[in-house]
Image (cartoon, rainbow, N blue to C red; front, side, top):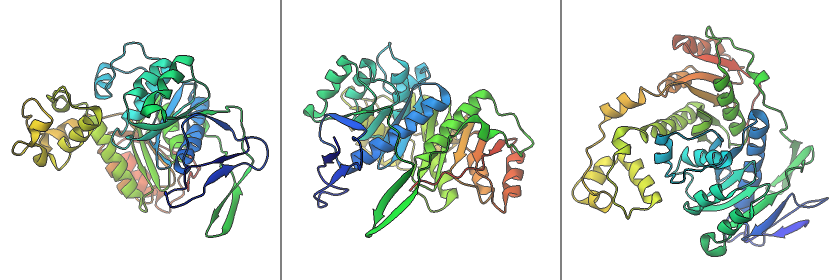
Length: 390
């Protein structure tokens, strides 16, 4: 197929809409559902991300995309009991690709609501069964097991979007897009992100462990497909906070850091022991947890509001208790899609347990950023690679 008609463009009033290819066939096949414009932007960006993650790490990889940026990305490492609980995992038998997607979805479950899922490997029944219980718009993968396909085709009353991508497709060297009637052309960003880009370490601490190198590669490859400016925090093989599309880099660092803090707060005893009613669905639990650990917790706990969500009234999660728990977060890796212009980014990152950093370098204040890393014994690599994505 060379051309595919879409439901509409970015918005329902933007009709007609289509995608097409100048030569050859479209690199994907629609197995179920009807794609929209944003669906395909998410699908094609997320597929490139997971394919590169698999190539860089050797591990099955997954992403959860929303509005052309990842809400989460991860590789298929096992889940401990705490993560299984906060990610709502009931099955005992999980494949590596299922673990990867569950981790990617769990990075920021609020943002992943209605996501587009991407898998580097075949979608199996374990992954499909997990997706069945989540609110999601579609999935892209190189193949599907018969059982997985049957499960997914029944999702959303039979309208769930299922795309099968050609894993051997290589796009042309140059890419184009049109804005305001003007056509832009550039060489596609096909730079390979490997451990070699982490060799330039100007900080006093030069010890970047193998697991930290893996996490920094995950951060950088995730940023390659995140709307800029962007910053990504990673721990134990998964993104835990992504700050996308901010005009100021320190705002990216703060936004992503706050998401990383929330991911960690979800693992606190106060949250793990919340007495949810049995009839509360996953999205409502996610919303309630987000409010409980945020600044609006009084609205949730005052009066009788709590009775809609909880069996008994929880204790307030105080700012002091939250700070004490966040202080336990450690060993986090941080990637940036361009240089840090000031040391304030490192100051904020340190508050979320960052011990390893990868950034392009090239600021006139690199010395200040290096000094701030040295202040906290953080190991920082200068990649000399900028990863802007628009």
